[in-house]
Length: 411
Image 1 (cartoon, rainbow, N blue to C red):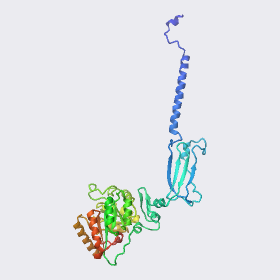
Image 2 (cartoon, rainbow, N blue to C red):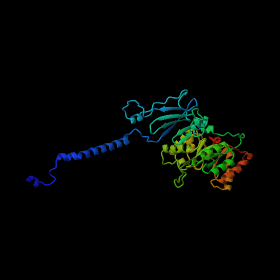
Image 3 (cartoon, helix red, strand yellow):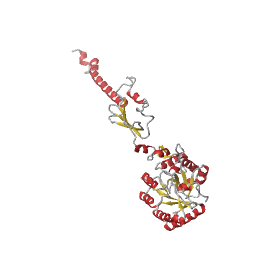
Image 4 (tube, rainbow, N blue to C red):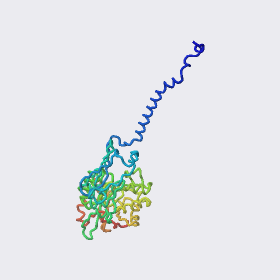
């Protein structure tokens, strides 16, 4: 044994080459694992199967001419399209070509037909099934209920269907007005029952007890408004939409959600008005719920009344605020307008309501017509129903609110 071998510390005579050879398999295995992980992550992020394994259906609206359902399979993602080397995601981003109408079709799909696009999440195959319209769906497509000629009086907005002036100039205030044969020269009285729609029982009570010429004003908050308003209109009543507006003591006295308030911009208030307008249909006009502060603000009220006129409706001031500018604004904008002569149940007792009805008769004799507002309280409905039974025998004609448009007298 050489002297150097005895004096050299153990472990320093290993070959560097053998050390590198022993680490090489470990480096190869680590590299392969890393490549697999990178490939897996890349597929998860950039893979061409965004639909997973769940089927997806897309529904649109259209119409067929021959009345039969047709199917049109779309190209599958598995089929080559364009450049075979292009990523599948680029093909998905490309806009789809316009769909050709089925044989015999004479134009774009109608508003009541359904076109269902079914996408298989596993294979990516697309198939479109066109379901023809029925009489019921065609009638409901235009206005959330009304069909035929009524559909032209409806505009679909982000809030829902709201009134509009028809292409032929027809207006809701004319289409849904009720005609009443009144005696010539008889003093006329138009009564409006306000606050309906929230209580189904109270509303049904008013429909059952009050004669058709009495106008019903519905709040936009009821859960069964379409049924109740349809029943009321079928019983001969004209309908008004009661829009909540800001009183002087707001928000301590709050008319409800979506109240029109003076601190909002005109655009915001018009949007709130359109929300209320979408809650039911077939009304002839709009009236205010509270609103002493709002109706006294010209800046706030003008855009609202212009929107009402633009929608082919009348505006009715409920007469609760002497500061209201509605009459002046309506005159300056050629808006169909009526105003209450008297609020009958400011004191909601039977005796006070009876006295108010007598005063309303006096106004009708003097001016030829009088408009009275009364709330949907049980005592109010009972007293008005009792009064209405004998009104004609005393020489008065009950008329709907549209008969009072443009006939209010200065107070």
